[in-house]
Length: 616
Image 1 (cartoon, rainbow, N blue to C red):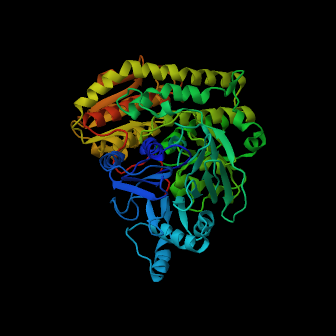
Image 2: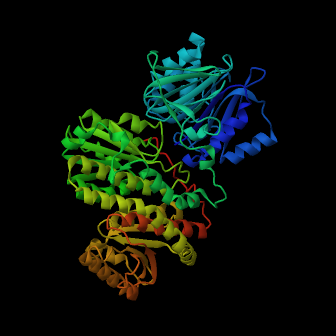
Image 3: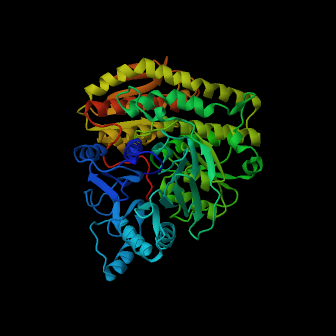
């Protein structure tokens, strides 16, 4: 979850490190620190518990000498609480060596005992300081930072990204990764390292992806990458497709508000370039027709919001491809000995492409012979590189922890995948394909209408509900995962009880929760497309209204049947039944944001959460 940045070059590093860490704040953290090798050749370090501004204020009050080699870190506490001592960087070799770390070193206790027996002492409770002291010990033997680093990482167990520098070797930063993100930024006479391209996109959009169990050494003049055995490795270059301004608020009250406003663009950009002659043809999947014709089962693996996108996509995949689809939480998938094989396609969904639960599930699937395809929003990420194929969502950087535009982009990518596979397998006629494509291409304008016509109304009644302690969400068919998503958003950023249910389950237990004044959101299906399903949902509304609930319905334009039973009606434009989720979720995102804002909460960085969960 931590943010990592490294720099070598001709410029003063403090400003580069601090701006890089600021762009990584979305990842979640509770302390921050930097280390630089100054102009006199000495290594200086400053770290503080709290937000990045605490560190900035400390540096302003007590300036630290600057230099052209540096590393910076934002930490989310794992081993040891969020204190100054436990913050990164950690020093070793009499303060001449600095180390920062993302992940968990599982065998740190064993290594610490070994180092204690050699007479070393420790100042923190962290597993990271163990790696730093061990690296200092090895450096004392070899006198070469890269060689010492190689020796250390081969002894570490768990998930980690490590960066290190030593004052005896200025102009050099060494990094390594195992099951944790690290990318290289290539500049002109300068180079960068980051846990995300956001760390350096302000300075360069040219990047290299580092593979699993690889070490990188950056100097102002070049980059060298080897595996843990020291064998040279060819890296995969790519261009970052967005610039630094895309990760800025741009006048919006929050990143979440900005990203909700970008939901139309997220859908449009994900579709762009993937429709040809009225049918979906995804260029990244060219040459995989044999794979798609040979699969007999699809398993979608994801966590949190991405899992709800997967549940939504299941309806389209099954209906359009006629292939059975299961949706599983990634962190449960590999622990139950699932039945998968060569005729199984495992589709992983992750905004960051670094979600550890999902990454390990992808590796598990590949080991058992399944084909793997990832849906991801981040270039150079690990999960796409570990998969047989990838569909990028092109939603642009999503900074707010609670996912919004990435969610609608993930559903869009799943629909594109379904239509691509349906074309290859011939399970839809050309006319059916064209109709679905027209529906999908019309969605961005319809989302924009929801934002224009309903946002003020939703924000107004969300302010009235600022003291609400519990909200229920109901839906049927594709409305069910949207109800789950609505409840999750409210929990994430408003810190109140919220639950989503399949509306048909209401009478099987959850109706006991309904009491006078209980707010209940109901996702109402179109009466045009399924009159029977619509009648059943209206009956559910009557049931809860009869028990005094306050009912807020999300219904399509012209649906008059809900009016006698609703306290609030949020209208969405007409759309085909499988496309309604892309519209119905937008009011729920606005409501969660509005309620959290009314409660005076930080919607971008909710407590206890991080954008990228890189430990399992």
